[in-house]
Image 1 (cartoon, rainbow, N blue to C red):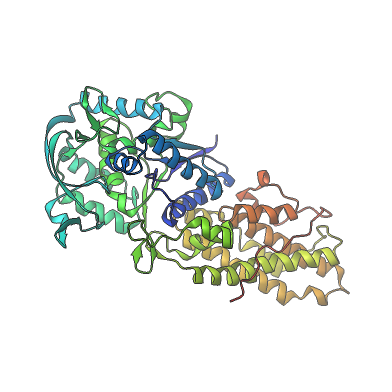
Image 2: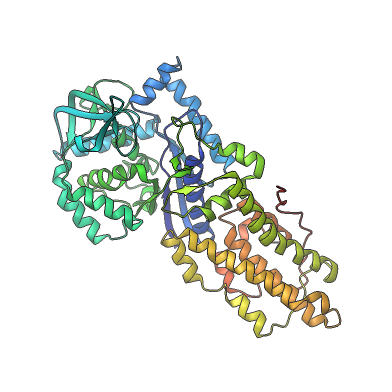
Length: 508
């Protein structure tokens, strides 16, 4: 039976224009999903759009559009983004779908039946933009405007009847849960942040609103709509056909393996979400990973700050796989990442054109001219085996993935690329034309190195690597991580094909 892996990205608020932060989360999730698939996992990868709440209602009014029609239009932009980023997601969920309504209503009814929800009155600071409640010590006044210290978003004083979830009862159970599941929150800095917040004391959480109507109504009281974060987070269940917990999808993939989120929504995923689930006797996900922001200069990219790098414009200029590689290599995963076009161009020239592209081009061209465009015979010596075996430590590579250590994974590949280029240079097959066995063995070894490196790069740059593997007569369906242990995967006299230039150097 295959291992299971269920990965989710945040479902995105439908802003009018996707930005690099959206692209980054999605690309990282796709990277993990693709790796797990080639490592013979049964993978379910979910993304989608979060379409309820006061800010959606206001945005639709600002655009003079029916709210659902507004959501339809904007959601289609994000669905289109999944294709433009070449994501391998299994599902795209919208919180306006009936399957999601049914799941949210069922979860609410369970929490209410178990007496974890009660009716009272809320008064306090609320940010429509963040869809978050803030305590007095979490806000500051700037130019006579009250704002959240963490996000900088404007907050409003709200007083209204509200349903509350008894979050205060979950302080000790959550701390116990974090202690028993030490890798539930990563990286460590995020874990420490959450534990500090919970130890500071949890207050009951307002989980409904009466001041607007765009949302899922409280089943027992239609005057209230369910708080968007209780609503939105349930998408991770509704995509698995919850509340039918006996169906194959739910039984196979819940609890989720990895919720991949931005650090700004950590509290919702690492405090509120496990509390809701534990209260409903549902096992929480195995891990919540809060990655950093994509920065422009020293600031987070956001529509309000007008500093958005449009991923689609970057893709049109430099290509999708170049962007995917750059983001996965250059951004220190878990930390904020400062990106720029200049750094992207340097990365394309040094890593992709000069290193990977150059290795593939040189070796395949040499094989075409000197080995009749077929995989040659071989007789390995110790030097050949040493470099081939250096890529056979599957457990080490898997540990990078399982610990979400993308940068170590990328460093491993880059080290092997440099070593492979050095091997081909040092062996000088062009000087071995009088020793056919040695020449063909050098070429065979180099082709195997390209195959292994390309398999590791497949989750990073799927389209480019498929082109390279096709040149080696390997189809996408035949890509297997386990084959890295095989130093003689390529069959003698197997046809190999000409490879066009993978990456053109960018002239300054």
